[in-house]
Length: 259
Image 1 (cartoon, helix red, strand yellow):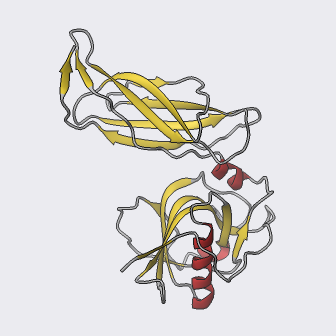
Image 2: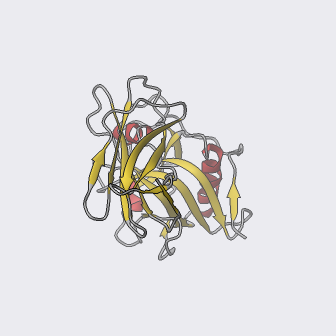
Image 3: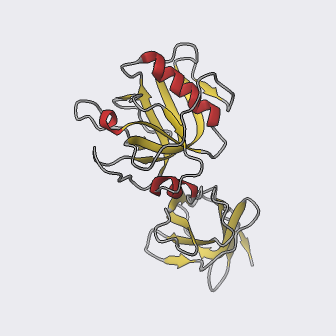
């Protein structure tokens, strides 16, 4: 049976904070670690969270963080691989940004690349775990991918409200909700957008953060089966490239109340 590991203490220690020049394969915040087929002798791992993957073998370019699942199989050093997987469970759910893997290994053309996919996506061919640089905490480091992960909200389920049968506009109050970002800055505001399948687009303007979560409510005229894409990102002083969290939903069949 797959085993989801909580944030518990393991014996393997983390390395010191990683300098921005280190060629690590991935920066991430981990929500959950699933070991397969079991926690005793796992041969595969599923990491749930947000990931900024290295792009290019040299340099310090990382892709914008993506939220989803990163899957891998045992690397060449099975003991080191399993130890690192268990160390990742130590920070699961804490919001701490960690760095792991060697980009030289993860971007080796001879093996499958690391991919961030939806939780229900097929596993496909798994990349071997690149254990070369171990795991590293990033506390106190102001580095591009670390900062981006700290500024990435999480899209939460949308409250579609209740549609109203109106002679003018069958609108419903739609509530968009996102978690507050991990940054401790107090000057941040949130900007939401939503785009319907026919191209109708709305934007929120600056929204002040709530306690732990931030919401934006807007009346929308939505049709059953319509697909809506929405985004949220933060803005603040000297923030030039904050990442954008993206969510989608399909409007379900729902009762309409007369107005």
